[in-house]
Amino acid sequence: MDLHEQVRTVVVTGSLDPTEEPGFARRLAELAGDGNADLIIDVSGSGPISPAGVRAVLTFAQLAARTRRRVRIVTGDNLITRVVWASHAGTLLDLHESLRSAYGAVADGCPD
Image 1 (cartoon, rainbow, N blue to C red):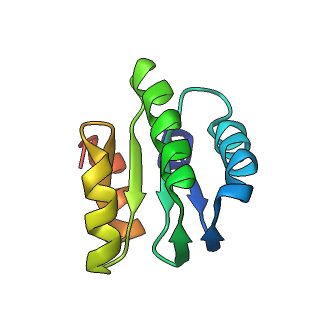
Image 2 (image 1 turned 30 degrees about the vertical axis):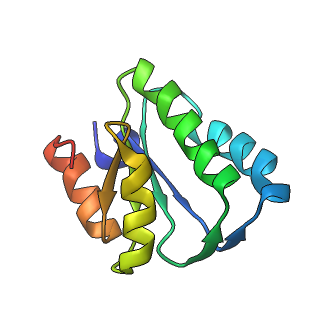
């Protein structure tokens, strides 16, 4: 199995406000697709993400955890973004500063 079969990547652009959350949640479900792949969500280049957007990611991460899939969040090096995601991460999300780091963790089979 190669890396592309092990992971799917979502790159969030622009801000994610509450009116966009239902579509975002549906898109996460679609991109997760087959139920076998882990998911990397790159928010490093996005604008503000509303609490509803965070909730959509956490809901998806809970579902993924039931099938032993991991959800990795790429935050970039912005401290505020990292703190916001870290405060919600718990054991559901793995945080990374870059896509390279997230892909490396998938390739190594490491949680983070």
